[in-house]
Length: 298
Image (cartoon, rainbow, N blue to C red):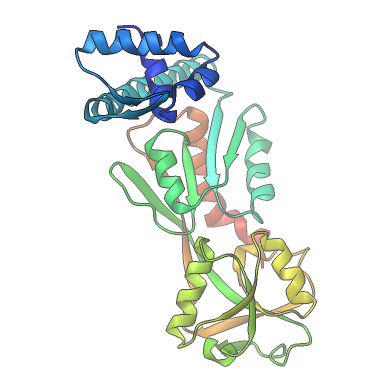
């Protein structure tokens, strides 16, 4: 049994289609079929149920795929470890986080002291982050809700308050604090419903006794505040989205009831290899949120 056979099987299992798998592998479809057939002969059992060029993993294939994935995971971990041992001052860090307003300062501060480190960022939801950690596709993630799973460590970094953002001409603009039910009849501008922050703010509204009229939904959070400034509605805004020098002409109002806060934390998989650079980035993240973040945000 050869490693190349396992690679071909892994790609075939990914697509469950011989022609598509062969195209990714840049080989002919007959060559792929023959390789899979030899692998099945070696194992003494079929791995797929076949229907023309479409193939489906059977119970043998599903069980074998779990083992093959572990093999390639260990190989990739070994490559990372050797590369790290050879060049500990360099390294590549893969990070997932959903705090767009903070990334420039956050990554910038780290790279000042680690100019030779490369950072690969992935945008992902909390559920996607868990999958990426479990499959060693990222080293670390910074999430706005806890990530739980076997061998996943999640450490709180900071508790972030969430404010109400209104136009400076709004009837409540001169208020320092409100109860959330005071805006139950207002038009809201927010993220789509499948976003974590939207789930959190909808929960706050439910606690206040109403369902928000979110008339405008946008994926770009920076556009939301511009529309609030223009008077098209009001929105929720987390504290770390409020840069000292770039806030639009809107007013942030503290919410007295219910308590509107979320906890930001950092997570990693305890069984996966972390390079020296990734370990240093993890410690930098803890220190940044504990000491430095208040220098950039209101």
